[in-house]
Image (cartoon, rainbow, N blue to C red; front, top):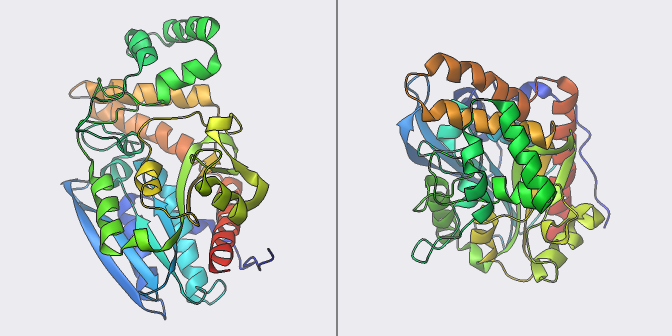
Length: 365
């Protein structure tokens, strides 16, 4: 299918300096749109580093009765909201200047800062240590187990990084690389202080998601959901990760919209391994055969580096009175998940325009 990609000047300054700046800029751009908008904030308990209030802001842009909806999600993992804000602000500018208009019978639903606490504090998780992208499980049933995590748990909080790397290398040699990545990152429900913790109840972002699905009767519409993430995969590249089953209607819809650049963890074609409790699954449950959910993952640095940075983050937050060390490490987190590199930012914005344009034109057709 042919479509026109908007070739307006790419402006890396849309990447905000903080959660508060991102929210302010997002709301300002939204207010300037010349088409109908419904804006609803969902306030989150707690406050940011400067005492600022926290919220997930949402906007329905276009015809409220549209049958086809492109959903843009940012900040599922809090600190990855810097890129999520930038992509959404850039798209709002394109809509406002009519360079990428919303097609007939189509609307855009933007979800800004789905984990606002993590965005504000520059962490991936929420204030309870919950990774929203491991939280979409049935909490009335026995929780999933991750025996690999339990085996590696003692190594996670070792002060000596060399000892930890040795333990990881021994596990990888015995069980394989994919087993190592699953043990660390596939999701665990036993250790609130540890990484990739799925929680014991629905988190703020999951509750917002379920309210939006009900509020806008999204189960009755054709959906193209694009969830913006950073930190995994080749530097600057936006990988389209599809966690639908390989032989499902969702995967077929993803290929129809985005072509052969779609990758599937379940087939081993993705930089991501299969995971438990992904936010995707909350959307899969309400999608018709013409709908799909994809993660648009922008790569930065090595996966081993990602794991070490996240483990250090959890180590620091597990100890009291560590404000200075946490503040220093937040700069490391920011560098990994949103590098201060104009070229990287330009690649993110260009690829996001491409994928969003594919979704808008493909869905409307």
